[in-house]
Length: 480
Image (cartoon, rainbow, N blue to C red; front, side, top):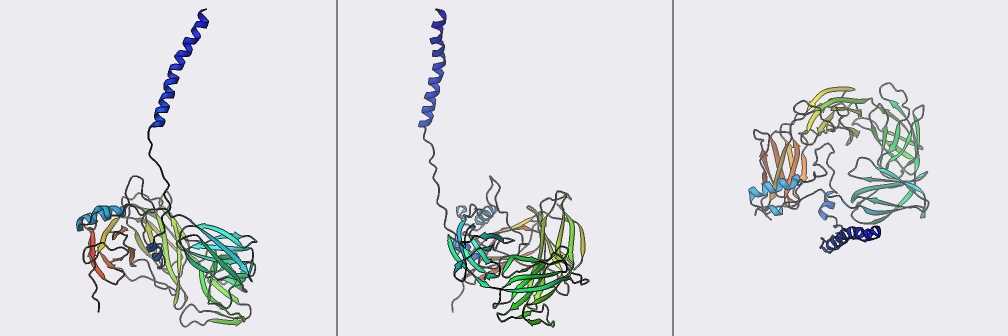
């Protein structure tokens, strides 16, 4: 009798908490929750599109970090707020963040030859990235890409046909057509400029057309490339090989078979011919640069960006960039290879929170630089305003370092360097600008509006190596 009576009491003891839990869940479900809504992607900024049409700055120049650490404001917003307080502009007008990930847009590319769709290879190159990418186009001639907004370059090729390069500004979903045109072959031989021996496995491409459409030299250093664009302007013939510096020459091939390989220097004769061009191309040995990057206390800096840039003549009036870059290892060490040994270079070392170091490299085969110490960074922040004190958006601001010295150069050097080159930026919607990664040296700031009004000022660091906030006021231009 006791057993059967105990069961209902046990069930009641379990049931009471269960009822309470159910009631609590019902009450929590009734509590109002914030409503989340998905925002539509913002339309691309027209000012940014116009800005990308300008020549791109050197990748060696210091740039702001691409992202802001969680929990901190954008450094440009802080700088704008600080300078705005000095010149009487309300802080709420300062930018809150400039680090936004752009949405991708849909690009439909249709490739055809003689009006019919064909299978092909498609090279697409975002002009703010280092290397182009290649995608296969199927037999229906259509390839869909999803790319970030910005300026992009397209070129397609098949077995013996090549399209003309197409550059366009991607701001929204777009469809384009590429027509493949008949191309002519080019033959040649790649040798070492030092002793004339053949260079095996050298990459040969026609850089102005398609950088990734390349062929390799054989055991005798010879090559045959089937797709040179004929009947158009001169194209860059680019040759790369391990252990050598890059060579770039200009070749023009007419539709009737007449061709011309342009001279690289004043006083040098061009090479002319008819029929299939045969090019003798010589490569100079590479420059190898080694060193270690340290902070001001002598500790190794891992992950610092190290890049060397020089310029060499490809024609008497045309220079091409010779660039190599890497990042330091855990011990701060780095090695750069593949640079030309017959021209001078500017070495630039950049690390977050440190002043960017510029160091001149003379022409050489090997350079052991030892330890390169980076000082703590200085920052220049400011505003550009008009004659009435109203912040000016999209004004150009140029920063120049004082006292840049002449630079050593080789016989083929185009004498273009990063050291002493101006750093440039443009003001944001609130008239604010920011330069980071600076050494504490005298500087000159110049601002210019789209109307042509300009002003400049000198800046000097204080005892702590910091610069005062700058406010550049542009006078109103007189109209005649």
